[in-house]
Amino acid sequence: MINDSNKHYKFIFTQDGSTGLYNYDADDIYHSVFGAKEEAEAKFVRPLNLRKFFIKKQEIKVLDICYGIGYNTKALLKKLIQIKYKGKIKIDLLEYDKELVLTSPFIKDGFFKQYPQISFMLFNALFDEISNDSNLVSSILCDKNNIKFLEPFYRAFIKRFLFGRYVYIPEYILEAFLHNIYYHCISQRNKRTVKCLRNNNFVLTPYFDDARNTIKRLTGEYDIIFLDAFTPSKLPTLWSLEFFIELYRLSSLNCILVTYSNSAAVRHAMLNSGYYVGKLFDKDKRPCGTIASKYPDLIENKLDGYDIGLINTAAGVYYKDKDLCCSSEEILKEHEKRKKCLNLESSSQYIKRNKKEQTHACV
Image: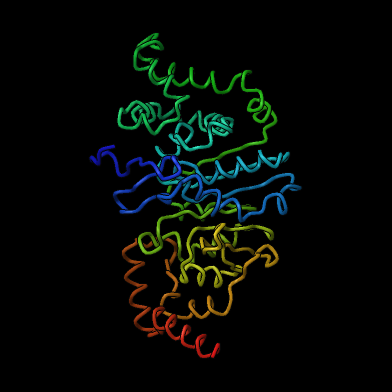
C-alpha cells in the first residue's frame, strides 16, 4: 500500500506468515515483526489461563483496546473454541481506525485454515457496519496492492466481483458483492458457525473513537482487558495513570488485564490505580509483558524487589493526562518536566548498582 494522503498505514507480512501493519503517523508497528498471530496468542491469550479461570463462567465480557485488525480477539475466540467454552462472549472493541476493523475478517491472519468460523463470526457481527461503509471496504479489498494480504477464501469472491459476475444493477454492485460473501460465510454449510450465531453466544460491539472518550462512557464490568496501544513513549495517551484508573473502574473483581508492555512507568501507573501487577514470560522464559488484576491470586509471577526498585527510578515515572484530553505532545512534555523535578536515579545507574550488589553478595 502506497503512503498517500489517504493512507496512514501499510500491510506487511510478519515472520509467522500472518499479516501485520506499519503506521506512518506513529512510525511504529501494530504487531511484532516476529509474528502477529504468535504475539496475540503468547502475550495476550495464554496468560489468561482460560481453562482454569474462565471455563465455568456463564458469560465473559471482554474489552479489546486498540483492536486494529483483530488478532487478540481472534486468538481469544480460537482458544475458547479449543476448550469448548459453552457460555456467552461479549466483546467491546475500541479502535480509532474504522477501516482496519471492517477489514479484519478478510485478513490473512493464520487462523482461517483451522478455524474459519472465527472470520465468519466477525464478518457477521460487523456486517451492518461493513454494508454502511461498503465503498471504504471495497476500496481496501479491491486494491491490487492488498490482495496478497487477504485470505484466499475471500480472494475468489473479490476476483468475481472485479470481473463483473455479481454486477446486476450498477447501484447495487457493492451490496451484491458483500451479500454474496455473506451468504457463503453464514450459511447452512457452515453449521458450527450458524449454531454459535443462532444461540447468540457471540456479541461484538465496536466503538470508533479516541479510546479515552469511549472509556469514560462505558459502564459495567469486564472480565478480560486487552491493552494493545502503540509504544508508551510514542502514544502515552493510553498509558496514563488516569486511563488506568478508568480501566480499574471497569474491571470485575476477577478481571485480568494483559499488555505486551514491560515499561516500569506503565507498571507504576497500574499499581497507583489500585491493581496488583505481575510479569509475563514467553515460552523461553523471557519477559514479554505485564498482567494486572484486582485479585492477587490471578497473578502467577508477581513483581519482585528488582522490579519495584526499577519502578522507583526515573524510568518508573508514569504519564499523566488530566481529564483524559491532553495531546501526546503535552503529556510527553509534562512527563519530562516532572522527571527532571523529581531528580530520581536513572534506570541504567540502578541496573549497574544492582549488578554490583548481586556480585558482592555472591562473593
